[in-house]
Image (cartoon, rainbow, N blue to C red):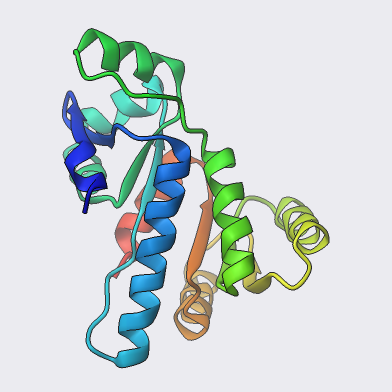
Length: 191
């Protein structure tokens, strides 16, 4: 609840004025809450979307109504570019630090591993997804990776991947299809 008080808008997109550690703690708290509610069958949160923003992505999203709506309803928007820090200072709402997507994701994975959360890897080419899978397995022995697939999801393949995601119901889904394609895929398949 305290973190919600730290939400500010930079132009049309909301960000939290907190550190990376605070955002990871907020994310884990949300995962814990979702897990608890699911276990009690008292309801369910929808998917919680985390979007990285650098100045280019910020500008791209800002001028697209559907994507702007998605950014405004996302769980967390990460200030992942120095231009956003500069913009936040010029708008008199300074953000404390850059929060890289990779740093955030690695911290999230470390805690997810300790708490036995499940992970699904989606996107990129087969060889890249396989390297990520192998590196995660080496670095986090016992990490529960419940699925992985490349980002080429045309036709029946896309439906099979969606079904695999539904069946495995991962706690964390990494989507690595490129920013524009990934955002569109998330928007179309979020429900």
